[in-house]
Image (tube, rainbow, N blue to C red; front, side):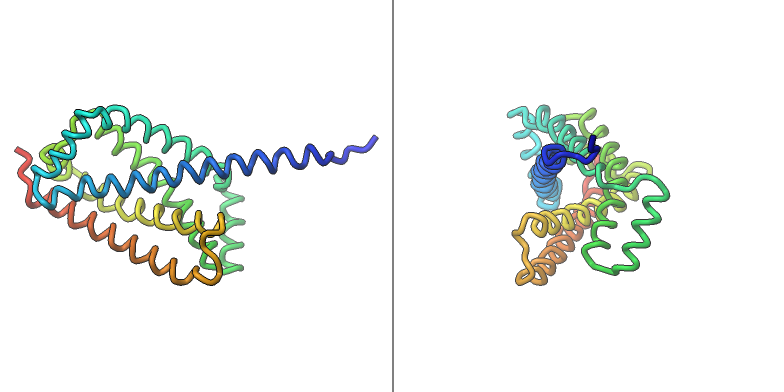
Amino acid sequence: MSNQPTATQIVQPVRTDAYLDTLQMFTGVALILFMWSHMILVASVNLGPGVMNAIANFLEETYLAQTGGPLIALIFLVHFVLAARKIPFRAKEQKMMWEHSVRFNHLDTWLWNVQAITAMIILIMGSVHMWTVLTNLPISAAKSAARVQTGWWLLFYIILLPMIELHVGIGFYRIGVKWGWITRSNRKGLKRFENKLTLVFVTIGLITLFTLYFIINPA
């Protein structure tokens, strides 16, 4: 009797992987949109504490903060679990991946490595940030400033900020490549656009941290 897998047995795992990849894409897009929205909310403090507080109050009064926060945390967890299927966790696998990356020396392969590394950093630091914010609602400019001005939080966010923006930018680019929106003809132009967009958001984030640390009075 033959032990060769049947066509159905071969197709089923491929179909399942396709469904999981699609779900990973949707959760990734949701997180990208959330991060851009989150950046706009926090950066509004640069226009004055009252602007940020007004937006935060709207989120509180409409219960978007109370319901949206846990929902984003759930999407964050689901996205990591889905992405973790392809991340090498064993030392042998990591060594093999590094050797392949060096041998191929292809930009998109290196971008995948950066995305995998930033994912692990964001998993830890992002979880700490979400827990700290969600357990200290409502959000306000004074609370945000007090946190940034206390202990190691400023350094924490200086590290977390570029990790998030790199991960989001590369994720946006790789989704486009994987699903055919970014092709050989427009890849270079869109890659430059993604780099500029990442730089813009990192700059906005650094300006916001400067404002929270030096300008806003937490009292």
